[in-house]
Amino acid sequence: MMTHKERFYATIECKPVDRPASWLGLPTPGAVQNLIKHFQVNDFHEVSQMLDDDIYPVELPYHSPTSDAIYMAFDFAQQGHSDDEHRTLNSPGFFQHYSDPARVDDFDWPDPAKYISPEECRRVVEAAPQDRVILGVIWSAHFQDACAAFGMETALVKMMTEPEMFQVVIDRIADFYLKANEIFYEATKGKLNAVLIGNDFGSQQGLMLSPKLIRKFVWSGTRRLVEQAKSYGLKVIHHSCGSIYPIIQDLIDIGVDAIHPIQALAKDMSAEHMKEHFYGKVAFCGGVDAQELIVHGTPEQVYQRVKTLKALFPTGLIISPSHEAILPDVDPANIEAIFNALKA
Image (tube, rainbow, N blue to C red):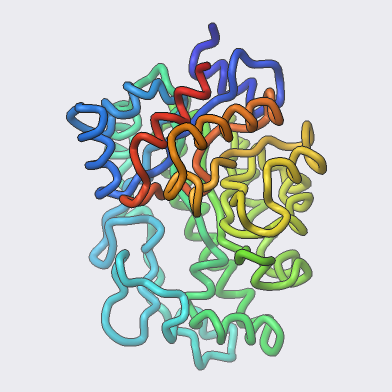
């Protein structure tokens, strides 16, 4: 039998495995409590151990006067303070009325070196079970943050009407994440196995913007983030919700190792479609429908679907819910069914 790390590396490299690698995901606090009660354990760590999950996520620790989450590092709200629970990319952002790229420094850009402690980075990674794949959840969502910087509707218009203004902002955001990630990587060198980065580009039916615009404005930053992670020997899992079929080949060309979460019910994103077009070219992570199946389905239905996924992808698919944030409306028995089917 393979170790957790052997199984992960073989799965993500599309090599033979004893069974596909797994990842529970990132349950919300309410979902964690449901899982703790269901499995009669004490905390999330014990849930992961009970399920014999291959991947253990660790979030990059970040603490500033405005945020305790790296994905909320920029407070672009024009009015009030935008917290994690109430953030929307549609709210008017700091740069909404800006047109001159030379004024990009009007915003008080945070310095990640002030708010990321290398000692804390080491501590949280060393606290993870060392026999599991330690996944650094760093997000580095430079496109989503650029949308927040203007307000999403304004950002999409700026791409067309004032491209230099949009580009200077998104590049500045990418620079922030590159510096933040370097601190994390240096502090945990040799202890991390992989990282999760990403931006949401897809809706249920297709991309929210054209592949042409993504290629023009976003991929340069993504490529730098991927190359940086790989320079530390890390596997890169790239996240995007929704239907992103037209840009999957782009992500392969950029060098990502796996694409997450293959939102199962989104257009052209079924595991069957991914198998037909990309099997052996890149790995995937996800595939177990989190919109309907694990919310409304029975454990037996979940079990049978995971068996189908295993048959479709004997390797190259990390079995996981098709949304990383498991919500409280997911029956813990359905999560148990995923892992029972994996081991069957």
